[in-house]
Length: 325
Image (cartoon, rainbow, N blue to C red; front, side, top):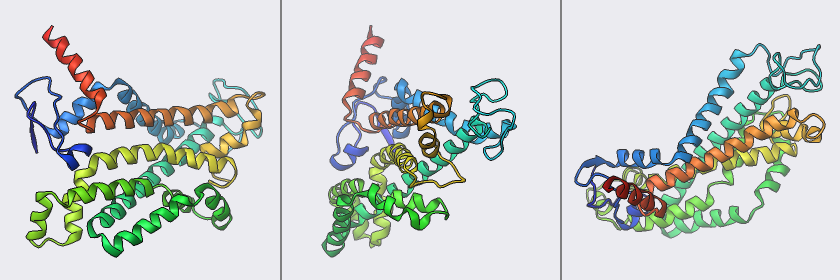
């Protein structure tokens, strides 16, 4: 797909449904793919770039860092109990001599994996359910939207807390499924509304006329035209899933011992926040920085993918004036 700058673009979250124009071209008349246009917009957002670097750095640190340390999260140094950070233990040690760097990296690993899996599952379910409801309508639409309305009124935190004893001692992937089960409904409603508009577009009607089955029309023509919405939703869901897992683990309903997550570390060391601050501050600090970085990246993707973003238009006008001057 090629975009001729200053002539408009019908793609994007808003453009897919309404055909809104794109007028963000620093070089008039130069042909550019939409992917490159989105990339340039994203690269102009300094906060989004910082957030992306932080997220990649945290993933790299979580999985490579423990390989470079001589301490493991399940071993103890019996010559160092409740030691503050120093050269041997850069994050200090806890009350039984466990290296806090190894513990924090293990908890970060678990939280990041859970956040990523929950985001992928919930966004995929939202796309499938919303697109199916909006495309088929009738009984399918009423049934799926009834399920959405039911899940929206249920207290997800309370339900997961009640069910947590059932999967205690079992795979943590069950926690991922529980979190994902309550994180897709609002996006599904948005996807349904966009599908109602997209199904009336000429390319969808042409696909129907050519005899393509409904599942192919949804997969090839409808879902790709709302890719910007789904990308942003998945990005935001990573941060919200990590926060949800942290809250559940803090109260003992999430990741179970002997495994650890940022939530279990924060909950287990909350009472030591003032007396032995390194036990609490390192896990809490990684949590805050990660969620903040995810929000920055989400904002950057929204501005880059949405052709009607006021912030993008203002930035591009400023750049054009500076070049003209």
